[in-house]
Image (cartoon, rainbow, N blue to C red; front, top):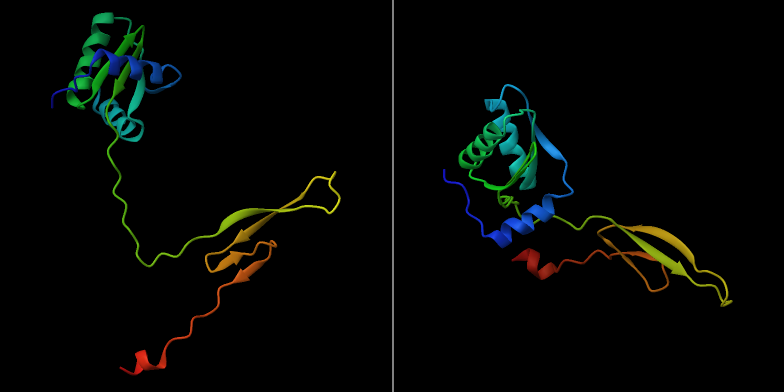
Length: 156
């Protein structure tokens, strides 16, 4: 698989995004093993932009590792500075199954009760509203009424 080609502006943006990241993959003295490749691929799938720390002192070997990882994992090499390598690959979209029968879940709502005297703070109460309930303007919870089914539609 060929590695991704980026423009210098895109590479600069990814470099700035990677600045605060910590290394998620460490390459030891054994070099690029199958386990390292697998972990790097998993990290790229999860995060997209990752830092890799290499414990090897040979700069040419680190350059070769960066090129090899970028080529094998279909990623873009962003930066090689010291013993840190930065790789980027777009995160794949996660397929989500749409559940038609799903009901809305509970949500927590803050209810403010203001005092009649103006100088006091309002009383804050957190209320959990379920899917079949609604909150009235006065801060009370009302349940949804059961809808009556038509007799004519069920006899058809």
